[in-house]
Amino acid sequence: MSRPAAPKVHSTAAHQREGTPVPVAPLLSVEDIHAHYGKSHVLQGISLRVGDGELVTLLGRNGAGKTTTLKSIAGVMQPTQGQVRFGGEATHRLATHQVAQRGICLVPEHRGIFKLLTVEENLMLAQRKKSPWQLQDVYRIFPRLKERRGNGGGQLSGGEQQMLAIGRALMNAPRLLMLDEPVEGLAPVIVEEIVAQLKTIKAAGVSILLVEQNLEVCTQLADRHYIIEQGVVAHEATNAEFLADDAVKDRYLGVGLV
Image (cartoon, rainbow, N blue to C red):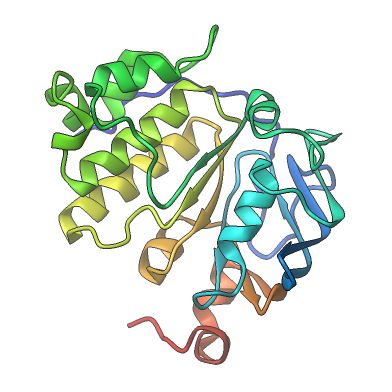
């Protein structure tokens, strides 16, 4: 079965050799950000990069600060220290809608779809003017959504709701798509579909920052990995380096890959 076509999003990244660092001028640059929930110091100096066209994962145990990192980048919460730069522009003091206008889209763990609207209404509501992603593009990548286009969001399975949430984000013309545990709790056959769909989106030039507990999914998709532990980046590696280092997986994640 041929892979569905997708609109090509402009990407300036050259192909990198395995093990080489992220480009000098990354699309996203996070520098020493700190974040608090009340008196709780959740992020304690996170720094990371995402290059144009890269897929990068944030790994770590529950409560390490992964979701808070995504929220700080998306403008859902503002860092108390440090800065976020996107496309060379400082974005860490912008409101959420302003960050989204720059091209950063967050698909949260709870998905955020409108359950009383149809699939097609959900998608059209999210469409940005002059977006390279049109309804037919989303339907090509997610044929299940085309089949269910007249169904309400609340009538979809968990996997279909996740596809709809990603499709909605694409309609908003992202340059960086951030996903918070997109395959958690989904059946293996649906996980395989979503992995293939994310590969298609990446091939179209969209950068992706992925938080995910499923290491098999992460290693199928990622160019690089960051491991967050207690609010700091404890380890950074290319995908090949990560796959080869069982000690790192055991130390920071308490798991191994078969």
